[in-house]
Image 1 (cartoon, rainbow, N blue to C red):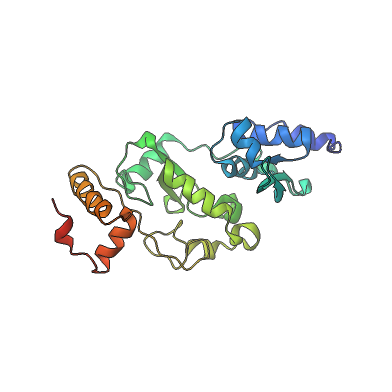
Image 2: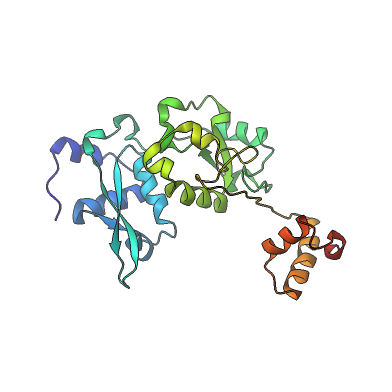
Length: 246
């Protein structure tokens, strides 16, 4: 059992209302830590780091460490960090964005996901800090500046979250300028992906383009290739584009 917390800290922790954050906090209070396996299998969260991130975004410091899973694998677990560093101004939970602000972003970006450029209804797009809150902090980000935020579809938001959670800059460096040069913050002008020398092209085929995609998929299958690898072959000139047109 974890040692008793000061009453003032316990009282502060009880102010967190976010459901995922609440699960993490309550389990740590009970057991001392919570694992990604528990979050996934016991509580049904398919992306455990997102739950931990909710706690951090609520101003509660967490530490990540490694434990053995039920089948012997090395997995992540979370416990409280230095609670003297609780960010009291964040204890109300994540920033609640107004409908007007989301509408402003939706119009600015023409209803497109900031990563894959898919055109979606507003309800399928989520507002995300361009630079993770854990790095920038609310003091460096203003809700009055739409340039500091981006709209992401669910899959891209989860991919960004996972990549950021494992980036050394978020874990220890916390340099906003490094984040700004990352694909996840500036997909149109970047030099790294989570500090790795990688280049990405997330592509979505929509409407009339779907027929072209289906034809290309058949061509890829015919040569026993995955679609992304086949696209690379087209781009690098190993496959003529006319071969994949319907």
